[in-house]
Length: 208
Image 1 (cartoon, rainbow, N blue to C red):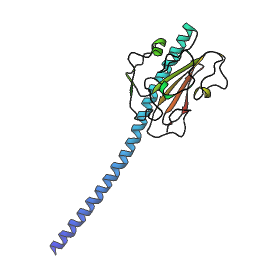
Image 2 (cartoon, one colour; image 1 turned 180 degrees about the vertical axis):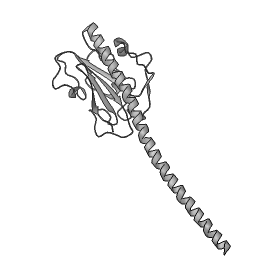
Image 3 (tube, one colour; image 1 turned 120 degrees about the vertical axis):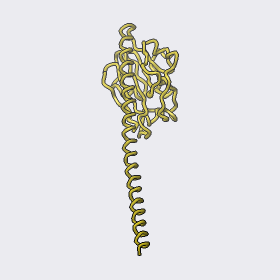
Image 4 (tube, one colour; image 1 turned 45 degrees about the vertical axis):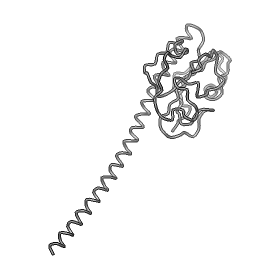
């Protein structure tokens, strides 16, 4: 009888331990899911902070350049441009030269070119970071010159009758693809934009 009782107690003890183990596994899974969501939000906030700072500095430098020269200047990867670009291909963004297929898809920082691109040097832009998680583009044009199709065409209801520029930050804030994006640009990026006539940031595509 004692042996039977001991086996029953042992069986109950093992059963309880297994249930407890399953509960612990479930709790750990929940905590891991919460931590993952929190980390993604932290990463998104950090990259948005970078984009805010870079766009504000780009805008300030363009305005100072305009005060000296009387014109805004494009700041693009193909920075020999002296006029607005006819498109907004992903390869025009600095510092990376991504394609639509891999644009920031790895969520990895891009090293700032050294020496700095001519356009950045021309307007006196000195990024405070050696690596950037977002990539940047400035298109500019003269009075009566139509902005390029894509992002540029969404910013004003009519072609500006004064010199203009717009600065774009393209960031991959998460791993999900968005539903749509400006022509020729990948959907997994969030595009933040500043223009010459407004300090307010606009979100063109939310890559969530």
